[in-house]
Amino acid sequence: MTSLVNPVVMSGREVLPLIEGGKGVSISTGQSSGAWAAAGGMGTFSAVNADSYDENGKLILQSYQGKTRKERHEELIAYAIRGGIAQARIAHDVAGGQGGIHMNVLWEMGGAERVLRGVLEGAKGLVHGVTCGAGMPYKLSELAAEYGVHYYPIISSARAFRALWKRAYHKFSDLMGGVVYEDPWRAGGHNGLSNSEDPRNPEDPFPRVLALRKIMREFGLDNVPIIMAGGVWYLREWRDWINNAELGPIAFQFGTRPLLTKESPISDAWKRKLLSLKKGDILLNRFSPTGFWSSGVRNEFLRELEERHDRQLAYTTEPLGEHQAEFPVGARKRMVFLTPSDKELAESWSAQGFTEPLKTPDSTLMFVTPEKAQEIRQDQIDCMGCLSQCLFSNWADNEAATSGKRADPRSFCIQKTLQDIAHSDEVDHNLMFAGHAAYRFADDPFYSNGFIPSVKQLVERIVTGD
Picture 1 (cartoon, one colour):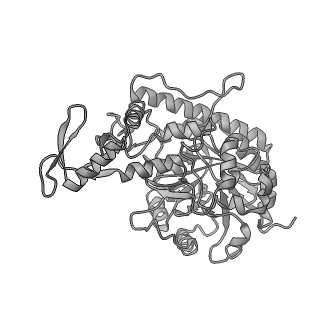
Picture 2 (tube, rainbow, N blue to C red; picture 1 turned 90 degrees about the vertical axis):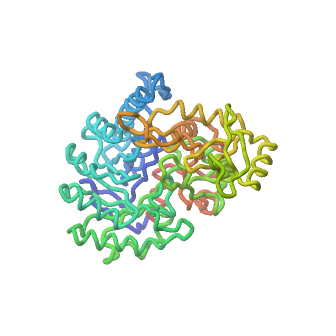
Picture 3 (cartoon, rainbow, N blue to C red; picture 1 turned 90 degrees about the horizontal axis):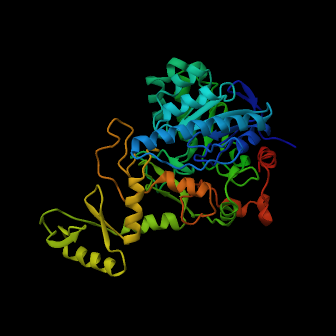
């Protein structure tokens, strides 16, 4: 078997320059990441609310008994630490001393620093590196240094890396294992698009990664690998990147392709869905309660959010300009003011069953059915603080346990839907993260007749260029 790539040293291990991308909430597990490492690559398990098990090895479904958000938040952190340690142990055992094991966390998840410390403390010697994105993880390098592991920030621009380096990372340069460049237009899950970038016009990753390398060279990081993530499918499509002196050492991260393996824990329904996707079926959207852009399969879950977003009307609390038409809102029927044409729209939506106008932080009314309104309110009440700040519930990881802002009904409880899709067959009405290349499952002859490879078979296929 001819390989397009040669081994590299990462996190003190000689591995293939192939990294499994971490996928949170029980999707990148110890089983899948351990198998990736056993195949010679760098496996990554997710420590974002990872699964844990009882003494008989039975899955512990996460449920919350706390009466307050803060109490439930403490339960969530305990689950996350216990689950992260469990997945690290499984990954270590499955890898059998081959490859390497990383853990992945989102910096903007609730209690990120506590979870990192708890897992690294409880899984000493089992984790070789930590990848971290979804925000600006300034403390990542310091935490990694405390436990003697390498760190891998996930960034989407050279500017973001410069800020991280100057503020914190220069103090711990010896433990920087690599920099993950995650393409903000093509990657799955949460994306790092900035306000200055157009979500409709994807940019070529080569000049962006070259700009990153130039900055890294300024800081003496010539030999630190850059890991290309997002849109990577066939290595043969990246020949110009491999052994390119301008770019320096390059590795490749695969987040979407490992979903469709025998070791992947996702349901058979999810795997069948992946095999049926077409180009354009992945939606880059801004519905996430994190406030970040994200990419997922445009199923009924995302369509409902799109439709909800479209049933919005601007209102004022007193007559102002064209907003002269009275409209009653809420149980007390308090009047707000719409334009006459918008009042007609509101009455039309109400006639269709969307009789509940919910106020948003942007002074708009969003019209939903009574059942959807009740679901939104209950999900907001049940918040367990899975993010550092949540637009949907107005939770914030602070003393007051609130951001002080109005909760936004245009979003959703991300913990609820990700737990549900991870542990059920319901794929149409849950958030299904995926990279924009996921449609290639249907076109790639490797998956003909519904073939699902083992991780070992997938890695062996990838190194050939396919």
